[in-house]
Length: 162
Image 1 (spheres, rainbow, N blue to C red):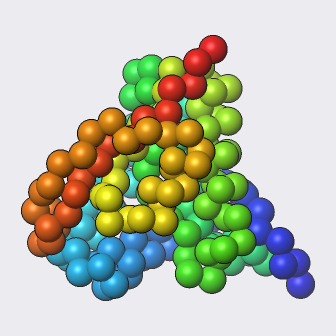
Image 2 (spheres, rainbow, N blue to C red):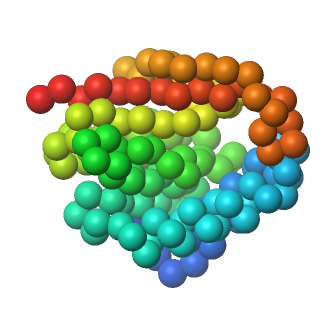
């Protein structure tokens, strides 16, 4: 059996996996309001219905055909928005997050986007460390009460330059 984590396009069932993993992690583990999982489902369906197939992409990190991570690049004018970045517990510590993030950044640069933008919460400490190591900077941070929890909402940016 192949032990290597590889990136691929979504296969049947992967979009449901993304929704389910976000629900399990954010709602089940972090205590977000259950509406969070519904929002992920709605936004993913809307993305699929409106996407530009060349610029807007989803990647799945898989090992032996089993998904362990996801990331989505959504074009918004001259900006690429990073969405639905998730690394499953069994994939953590294997470079999967770095691999997904590098793929999105390289794709955004190749597509001519000026920058990559993402929204997250400071409480996602491991992800924030990964963003910082990849060259992103936190450009906005504010306390909020979102999804039934007190959180610190953040916006991060990575200028791509030409």
